Length: 242
Image (tube, rainbow, N blue to C red; front, side, top):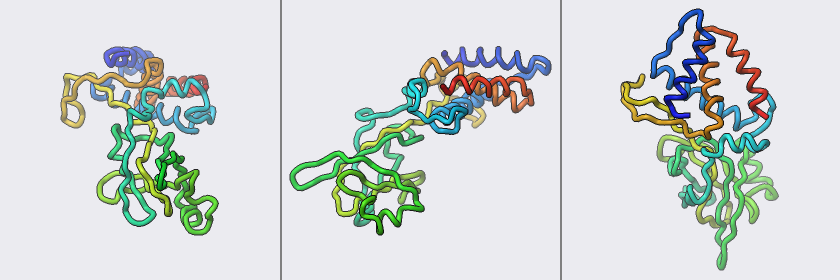
């Protein structure tokens, strides 16, 4: 769907839900609702917080539905990490080509005297980090994995990935991730923040667009306190999560 078609679809569905009260949403409100719908739908499809309790790549439909947001190498080039101190390196997420949302895969080059080897990144919870780094050599960084954790960037706003390679020497870091979806906008009007944005279509795969509108209408129905569509949307989620 184009953004015009998404607005039209929204109008049809919200009119059916709220026909007794004649609720009207202006252009800015509809764009806001559509963008909220995109984020809710994306998080539902990515994580296990969905009716079927299935993650991102546990069904082909989920993979297809988020494929246009899934950034992979070489679209996202390798990044040279910054050394903070011995055994601690940092990759600011702001250095990525696209706005980062969720990490799906990571690996790095481990440099040896006469060769290099690609090694997986392994996330460790903060609660377990001390034990892994200082007490458990079997789970610390080695020739098969490099321990990582997330935190606030050391020199700027936003977040970073922190790497703990021990005595190993790292080359570039390669990250695959879901990027933030583009914010849809009908264009040619002043948005709620006072800025006039250019027209922007939804960059999710086309088959997801009706679901985005459904979610936006579900959010809107909650705002205007119409339970009918909210219940319908919950029923549809069980089908869409397959």
